[in-house]
Image 1: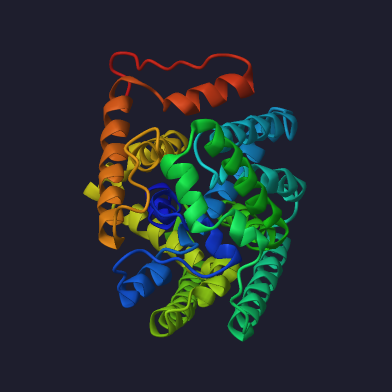
Image 2: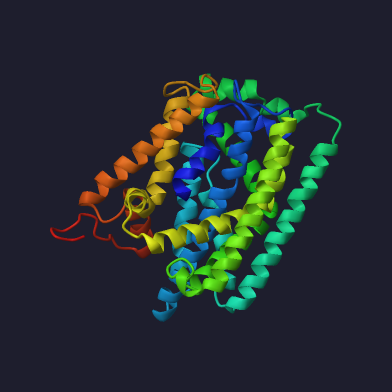
Length: 376
């Protein structure tokens, strides 16, 4: 769900010349219905990234348990994370500047230090970190709303929609590579702000996994009730911020969501999803999403490959040529490609191709890829 849903947030960066909006006037999709955009902001913005952070933290806890027993913690996990960061760098240089893998890897290196922290302290530290992030997001939002100057600066001139369209829509591959690296640098520069929200969710995901809240939520009824309440409050606050976006047609309200308000709602989504999966582990939705979930890294990079082919000059050159709804049709098409490819691939293979390469590099040996006869 998280790996598919994140494309709903990323599609604007693929299909529209919108990066420069961070430094000047906001750029909106053509024919945007702002109330529909408000719904997207309320339900999607930051939530899928937050959900992936929780799951990344849960994965770290499982690796900690496994590798500690074998005496390989944190060395082998650090090696895995190092190669994941390398995949992120390659993703940036050769495909898309909005990569999240490198940022996840950098935060994971810091989160390693907390693997041995007692669960109760994980809750305290993660909650303080996320609360601070919400405060920062609120201050950024207030600052943006109070700003009276819309005069674009030098950075806007360099990354204006017109120039971005010129480079990605009509430029050479080398020109695009140069701009991608520059844009990724600005995103990484925001890590000191994002690390409180993302790092807090990493730690909270570790705590959730330690309490069995992803696998056995029914056995922790009090905790699940409280976390569902946190998610409900987060939903109300996200709707309020999204209402501000829709009514004022001002994207400044998104800052408080991006920099922390997404966290409580992501936690609620994770708990609700775990409850539904425990009650109906063999349902149609679970079967549909299980395959892309098992090869999430491959599907994530596949999204970039398809979208860059569609929108960049070396492909079909559709950047800025699709309206608001046209971009959603692209999302649905990429989802179908992700799900279809994952199911077909896993019929004969044990894991996704990128997952296989990652494990081979991390462990120094090639894991089995072809599924043997009779293997589930």
